[in-house]
Length: 286
Image 1 (cartoon, one colour):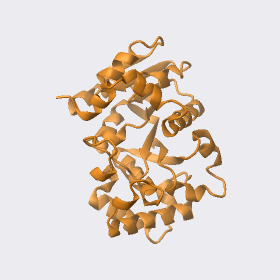
Image 2 (cartoon, helix red, strand yellow; image 1 turned 120 degrees about the vertical axis):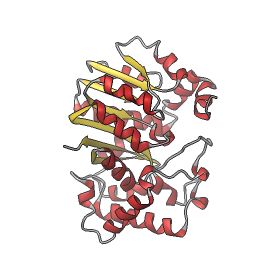
Image 3 (cartoon, helix red, strand yellow; image 1 turned 90 degrees about the vertical axis):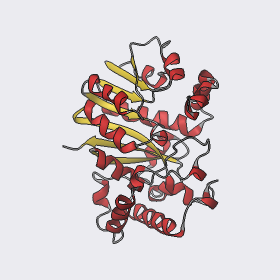
Image 4 (cartoon, helix red, strand yellow; image 1 turned 135 degrees about the vertical axis):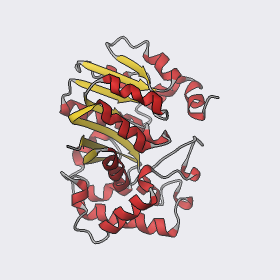
């Protein structure tokens, strides 16, 4: 039986992907630009793009020697097959443990990108743990998340239905920490160390399992089977549980590159509550 996500893509796969990456679709376009800039800074010889769609991101990186795209959607892979570039495409279902075994066959890769994918996974932790099979000790993962803290912003359309009082207090506490510590640090968890609430917050996130993402159906705009959002701290803990150390957070606001360049400006500490998504750069833990 076809699930809702595949039905969504099959409405018109080509039109969907074109709309998603048009300049009018601000978040997807900004995410594309931001992650592309990060990859250019890293200068990898090999890259795996998970949730590659029609392969246009990989096509834009023609200077990389070894490019691999992975997607579970037949609709997207059919579009990708028409790509003229020298790109290898693999059908991998991140919700299937057997399918994820293919990661072992890909070899050790320099960079892994995962844009707009993790929201739909049954178990984000198991997926990220599976990715360790195609890494080496210097591999970088670049991954984007929907920002749960945005839903504490009255301008969010989900504001009125999202949180219990206890969760509101926890999320407000995390926003306070980010405002005090900023968004960019060699070790983001260490940046939280001096804040009196940090130990309690980290413990509560681990104990209640919220590092695997919120799945409240009221937050789910398309009624997909799974729809996950993360606070920055939840995402960092999720990556840490999977074996990756977060080193950088980039909020996606008005423009991917603008947010990236201005993240150290005077207002950077306030951005995390006002961006709908953000990008995390992480390294394999040695």
